[in-house]
Length: 476
Image (cartoon, rainbow, N blue to C red; front, side, top):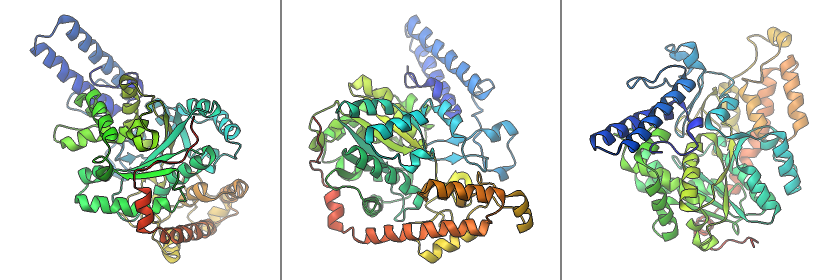
């Protein structure tokens, strides 16, 4: 298939399909111009027609070359018809929905072709680990997976696996939303007792943002301090900057090149929406994010072993990178990485978009003081309450759109207390001010404790985490 990873066509987004059709059309024209064999041209045309049928089934209208599918915009855009407004848009750089409840994750599972994390899988994780499932699993915050059952098969049969997650360091300050994958990855590392690699994609941020290389690397080191403050085990964790590690690891770079050889320009255009005016750095970057999925990218940890499967906890917007990786893996003789996908952490102003590190009022930052946290929640947290106290007492609040309640689902550990808050707010017994006060009382100590742990992380500790070395594990 010239333009779309094998087997992934059915889970492509409208934009991916649109770009794939354009790329496949180019291929058909070049084959005809180059007087390719009839079989080759017929095969390419057949695929083009199949993609156009998929596009019509997904979008509900015929493909038009000069008319890409509309990206949904926030509600105040005014220019969308109802059908377009309902369509969520998710890629590694943009997350948009017109719904105050946030992204429709069930639809996203269908569109991306992943599997829902159901009660049965959560129970199986509990049986395998002997531990109560993390609140992110109990509450559906990690909601989708690829091949998690394979990971559990391996674990139950005493076969090894390792964890891989990452961070794109675009600024010095991280916000609470950035902690979600790391809080969960720390739990996975603890309950499964496995090694972990954390990729800092400072090269990516240099390519996409207006940063110097030194700034991007500096942010990677600063962000690493916040990640280390989550409590990762130094004996089992390797954190690396792409700018640093690629130059010193032939194993890593060899895998990048293998992946690059097996992904065409048409494919990355189809998957990521790159255009002819994007830099070649952006076009080749996905291979760098894919490489840590393969164990021999880390010879200091796994030597030359290529058979150790990888489990990647990440937000669902990163999935396109790993759909590509999973397509390439068997062709270069490696196991496909497994994935666990999280929902997005909503901005304070509402769940329509993910938060921005460049907007200080869109989130609670890990550098915020107790006073700043209180002010931000009280002033900016979108409320599901009614206009007046009388109305609120009578009709109750809406937890589905209330950001303070959403934040509590992420950070309040006690399930019974969370359920009581939901009942009280929905019935009108609890007012918005009281709900915000509860959230403030949860966030203030959480951030203060994180800040205290971060102060303990010296430059020497960061250097140790970021030095390529053997990690401790008891694989056979």
